[in-house]
Every structure is written in C-alpha cells, then in structure tokens.
Length: 385
Image 1 (cartoon, rainbow, N blue to C red):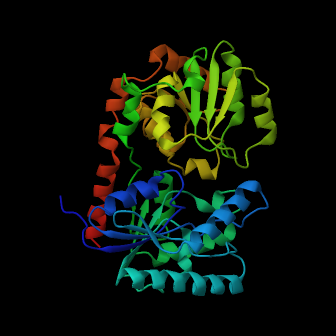
Image 2 (cartoon, rainbow, N blue to C red):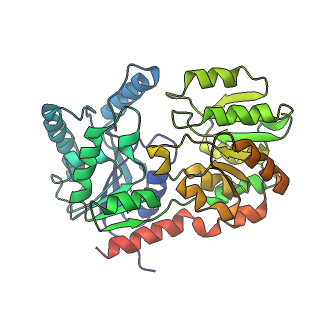
C-alpha cells in the first residue's frame, strides 16, 4: 500500500507529555516517513483557579522556556504561549499573532515549507490560514463544545475550522454525521489500539501489581480520568452488588461529582489507586475480572469513542459499557451494553457468567483494530487530496 512520505506536518494536539492518546498514536506512525512539528495544546476552555489548571499553566511556561526540541525521531515539539479566551476579538487577534509568529519561526528553523496542517484542536482556526499550508486536515475526536467550561465560542471556532479544512476525519459515527453537514468531505476512521501492548495481560510473565494482586474477587476495574462524564452512581451500584469483591479505580480525578466520589470513598471495597503509567496498564488489566466503562449519557459521551474500550478488549477483558454508539459497534467483541445506570449490575453479572478475566479469544478479536491499520486508512485518504 502507498504511504505518505517525505512530507512536513504541522500538528496541533494535546500536550506531548500527556498519556498516549489518539493524536500521539497517529503522529508517531506518520513520523516514520515524514517530519512532524507538534504544537502543544492551545486549550479548549478558559483555565480555572484549580490546582490541576495552575499546574498545567506552570508546566506550559516551563516548556515554552525550553523552546523547540526533538522528542522522538522526526517529531519536534513547540509550546507556544496562548490565552484560551475565545469570546474576545482582541484576545483572538493577540493569539493569532503570537501563536502564528512562534509556529512560523519553528517551521523556518526546521526548514518546513508548504506543510500539511493536521490539527486535532478547534482553536487552531486562529492560524489555519497563516502558515502557508498546502492542505488543512481536521481530525475531530470529541464534541469539544460539550466539555464543561467550553461552549459556543469553541463551537464557532470549530465550525470555522471545519469549513476551512480540505478533509475532516472523525472517530465516531455521530461525529461524522454532524460534521458532514458542515463539510461534505468528512470521513470516518475509528480509533485503533496497540493490541500487542495490552495483550501482555495474557502473558505468564506479566505480574499483577501488588496493590491489587491480593484483593478479593471479583475485581471490577476502571482506568482513566475520573471526570464529569463518568457515571459514579453506576460504579457505586456495582460495588454494592458485589460486597465480597473489589472495585478498583485507576486514574486522576478532575471536576468529578463530589457527592458521588464521597459515596464511593466511603465504601470499604472501593479502591482509588491514582494514575498509573501506560506501561503498567496491562498488569492492572490482568488483575481485573471485568472492565467498566460507565458514562453519563449526554452530547459529549454519545459522540465519544473512548480509547480504553479497545484497550480493555485487547487485554482480553469482558467490558460492561454504557450503550453509546461506539460501544454498540463493538458489542460482538465482548462488550455488555448497559442502557441505564440501573442495568450496569446486570451487565457485570452477565460478563462474569460468560468468563471473567483476560481471554485470548477476546484479545484476538481486536487484531484488525491496530493503530497501524488505522493510520494506513488515514494515509490513503491524505494521498487522495
């Protein structure tokens, strides 16, 4: 199959230092044959006076001071200063000038000319026409206007970017439907998974981490950010339904329901472990009997395609998930769908009855869902532009 090669790509994405999300998986593969200038996050909402946001601001200032640097072969990272204020024409103009100037300077330093602008960030509409890009590609992986703290101003920027783009790539069927109404050159490329990485949960030499190795079963597991879109009540009901077992929650907490968190913290069989590195996740999956993906149903989650769903399955785990469209699309691969908070417990019971813990059959069912295959799809579409 022909590959995209010898091109310069300017990519607006999240912060490179964060967990490997879809953006990093895609760009790492494109960087095998192309050069990438990765622009750290411009943000999709105004910052709050929270510890998490203040730390992000401090980290961003540190990265800005470090200038342009190479993080991996063919991938160079820049952290421009920008104020995520989307309702002020003056601030937009300031951001256009400051961000545009910094990115063009980095392009000049790297010798980039007529690059592909490949963006995951609606706010990059600020500079989409100022970089001399040959093509503009918008890869939409969320309904950004539905995030808490975002809204109409982000929606307007995204609309502007979609209309300007030569190609819009979406990761879910609802996103494809909504973005096609704005730009008919919109396609669907679902997320992939690093199956070999998560299939380590099936290897004899992979150790279950000590903090869950001796917990009483069944072990119901979740990893990822605990935020406003996670259905904490569904988790509570599962922990209550299996008092002899354990509910394990791995991940940071940000803007989650405080009352819901308090109820979970009060339960003796619920274990909050905090964030763990990507490399450690297969070990935790090996210790889970059933993986949970409980979402509050709203515009944000209905449009989502959560990476952890494919990662759980690649680890061979049965998954009980809220019946969002992209979970329905994988129902035949070991996903038990819950149409409501109340039905999560029934889903867990069905998953346990069908075979708890990692299964090689479930893992192998994800063999055709690799990131390599997904990026080949993307390359094919880029070569057709």
